[in-house]
Image (cartoon, rainbow, N blue to C red):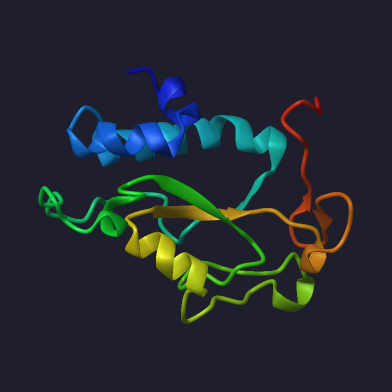
Length: 151
């Protein structure tokens, strides 16, 4: 399957592909990281990435047939978290110079639940300072272009 197809496929279609082994979590994450490296210099949409861009899959057992569905809802689906939401070990700035170097010790509840459901957090997306404002500009990461905007 083409990397571009993987990057634009909804999670509802990715999870069954991963579950039956048609797509590996590593293949999916690598496709997303490759695309991100290609488009982010123009868009500046991803503000912070985890300390290591080298993602190493943890050895996980495949879910048992009939296992609780909640444990596989987001199985190995890469996600980015808005920079307004604390993420353990990944810088969270709220788009403010005040918190430019802040690295939370724990995840926000929504991130805990995403991880528990099997999602893979790849980074943080840019935000206006404290989420206030009509455009995504802040002193930490500058402005961001929308995908349809040319710079």
